[in-house]
Length: 318
Length: 263
Image 1 (tube, one colour):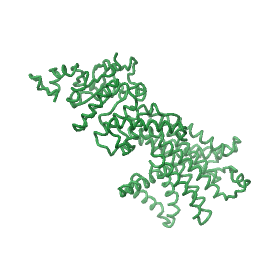
Image 2: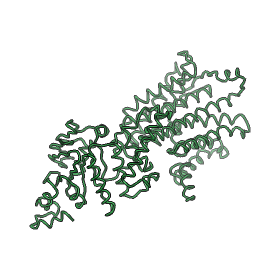
Image 3: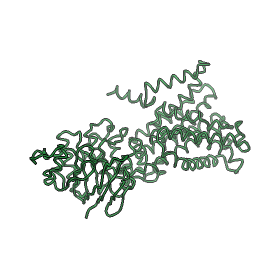
């Protein structure tokens, strides 16, 4: 990828984040925007794991759960500042990803999918059963990081919705920047190489097992930070954040938008976060329409929305 | 002194002896060719030497070190690289990036530096791309550098694999049918390329069906049939060997010329 392509993508993303609020008719849209950014951040992790390295995980919500509950538990139990709790969550997620990844990344394709699925379910079960600590399925409150008050002291008054919109938007930009850096780097090339042919990657000296583990760990950190941000802005969290449906949602967003492309995957997050809100006009048939949209995209734009459309446009230009 | 020495190498798949008791040596600058009918075990032998298969018997030594069954990425670190009979390229990457992956050992570094695009990481990446461009020029693919690798012709991809293997700075290069699917002009280019690589001191082990090419450039030829070595020697000796002629034509032949070894 050319350096200019990286900055073009980041500029588009920045402009969308910065200018969209001008068209928001109410404060509610800031909340929707923040939710989109959180989903987008988690989905970038999937791009690194699945789009770059070609490995599948159906258990990444497990890491979102670790991040979310680190934000909920660490401030009260360990006396950590909520921001440090996010870092702690990311470190724990990375350590868990490394330990879990070592055995399961030996598996390929659907074997890996099922093994990672098992991991996600395990995390959700632990969070649901440790009632004394997590409040069980009823969930628990999450302390406010107090950043908004800090900004207020500096003279910048934001509503809760506005604050999290900008905070998550910034995190999404940073996450996209790092993922695009990685894509063009020697490590990113090695990841995409092992995706293309593991045996050929080995013969040029790529330690395939180690690189898969690195990709798995990085993507776990993305999911973890996304989980922490979600917990802090909602001020409340339940074990559903680590649930099976959340894992599936992440992968679906990435594949729908274009799993090989950072911008594409974020677009997938936009669509799948917004569609359910828009489709409420279909009332009982909402899920059906959502399913139909997904099937149609996969049939007619198999690389995902953004990469397929970009290819079609390029093809017409020639 | 030989760089690669293979002794008594063998492997069986479910009771079928695919390769049995094969030995050979390759010295720096030498081109050693392995020939034999389809199914003779040539690629299986390659896969054992390059660490893709674990040999059932025998030893592989690289520069004196026992590397039998060592993982391919560790062999690459010791200077062994290869190409594949059935192309193994990275189809979704550009031609340039494909070649640049060959610089992985020399140009990869800390993961964090790559994520943050630190100056060191950018320098390493640029170094790999510049080196890859030079190698693409060497195999005649510089004009295709920015195309997606999946779009290239079969013969071009064979050369791309050679460029990628060269990028690892190999001391020993295993080429599995580099001229397969190439037209006469392309074969001649491959011919020159291989001779040039050998001249620069790389030890080359070659599997090839194009007998003209093999007879012209080989220093030494090893003939396999049904997984066993039936003959070896310089091109002239091997082409006159009655066993070789029988293996290729399926029956003993009185006239040595009928071996068609140079046609």
